[in-house]
Image (cartoon, rainbow, N blue to C red; front, side):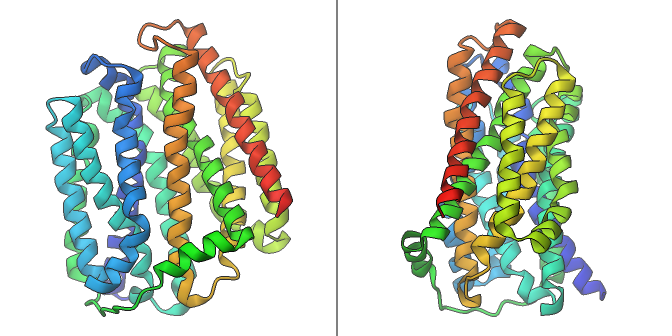
Length: 393
């Protein structure tokens, strides 16, 4: 592979890694932020929600905007905005400032995610597109996996500001690589975003796939919102060990992603969707009774393996019959459904945990464990709803 192609892939990979890292790295700092700003769980969870809401707001339209303004140009803008927002997050003197900066960071991340996938066809030949898509999927999982572990280490060494400051130099590096190696824009003013919304509304199987994607993403997000409190308050782990424990699930997702795709190709999407949902049910059921670190991690591994199977099978089913000219729009809708699910997981399931554990700052380990069990009992209901949707369609 030529040096220019390697540099282009490195810039795209780093862009995807940073966008995913921004989703998970802040979660490990939620207990510390609640203490530093002397605020409630409901207030501090907006550090996570603001980022996700910003991504959700623009993820579908970012692709169309890139076609009009130029994908390379827009990616550079997104990377610079992301880097600037990281600096603003690190300098935040108050929680409202931090939440506002996270909105800007999420807008930059949304552009990065959309443009990274959109630039694949401009960067590599058609014969290598599948491999690069797989590479970017792996980078997304690796970024999510690195968030808790790297975040826990940064938190223990330099405090909560380091969680955000780390993205500043990396964002600038990705922008420099993109400016140097990505091909010059070929602007196309045509767009088909309207079709995507009509298709999602009129096509029942597509609607079902998007709905299941949102439900399962909500369950996965609950592990990142509730997990830090259970591991720190319930199990007594320090920040570094908590980060490592939280990284287990995403690491399993990164390892099982490619095998899950191969199983889907071999046995078909319907079977693997049900298999993934079955494992998800088992994992959520075990988490609703988990007592101790080993039981928690074992249940988390089962849950995440099920997520890998489900995601590979469901995405394949959604995208298989989409015409080439409309895949970008439907892909954007898949991203949107996933992000809506992440918001549901952070807000609704987070609210369940807060209801079951009212005073989380001073809660006993038994009270935090009860909150975990209650949250994943509700999450099990969401998975069963996804099973019912899959069975119907």
